[in-house]
Amino acid sequence: MATLRYYLLFDHIKIHNANAISSPLTYGFPAISGFLGAIHALNRKIESDNPIYLDGVLIACHDCDVQVYRPNDFADYTFRLTRNPLAKNGDTRSIIEEGRVHLDVSLLVEVKVEDRETLDDDEQKQAFIKQMQQKLFQQRIAGGYVISIESVELYSASESKDNLINALLPAFVLVEAQQDLHNITAELQQQDPNATALDALIETAMLHHHPQGKDHWQTTSVKQGRGWLVPLHLGYQAISPLFAAGKLQEARSNQHQSQFVECIYGMGKWVFPLRLKEDLAQAFWRYNCSELQSNGAEIYVINQTTN
Image 1: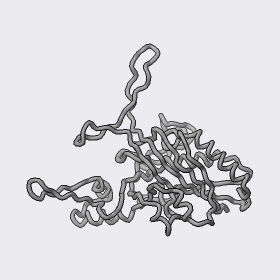
Image 2 (image 1 turned 135 degrees about the horizontal axis):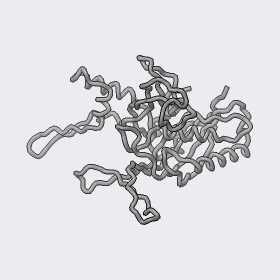
Image 3 (image 1 turned 90 degrees about the vertical axis):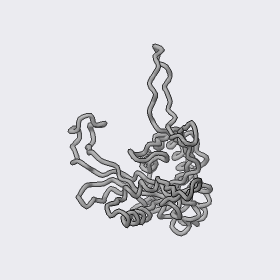
Image 4 (image 1 turned 30 degrees about the horizontal axis):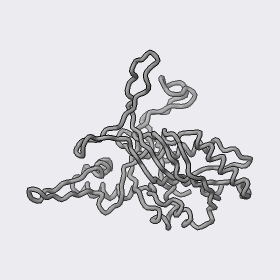
């Protein structure tokens, strides 16, 4: 059985043109699946005589530059769109309608091994670190290009967690805030018994202005006192039967099974790493494909549960 022996830190990964539209309802920072998918792809490329597994992923953001524009302070934001070069016959190509974001993030990844002697000497560690850095440069993260990685470090799981936290500074770490979502939903239901968790998510994007005279007003938000809350796209829920390979027309691949799904939303919170000293293990995101909804529908979700 694989056990946690190390943490692999990809420090200050600069990503260009990552996907800023993570779901039909959210935009900005990419979906968590974009980062876990990149680490999963990296895991499949590991070249080692002994099994090495990359598991949970902690996401720390140093800078998030969404490519948006507005002509003045009172206008709506619009995405900065790009146009491909002219065609060979001189025709103008169409504008590419997509949301883009430039990122500076650090990823802390759990490294599990079956043989305790795996990565035991410095030569093995350096070879593993070099391999991981090279492989990550060769793939995308959340749809964006990796243009630089400041450093890659391997930490022992037995050493002080303070070293890991200090290595992440300065940044904000993305953690689950499902309890805040439940509390906000309960508050809304006191005013409207039909309010749902989706209403609570939408409420976090609202500012309420209460006039106090002709030229004064008070602004309130349900997020006040709760920290930096953000809506998250956490996975998918099946809304159709599972189709055999090749049965669904126009599917991307005829070699795999297909299924219609809809997005699952939740709530997250950006916290300073120093707040994680007591529960750093709770900040790692993992796949969870074993859950079933009350109606029996299968779900594919990402959450922060310890293994």
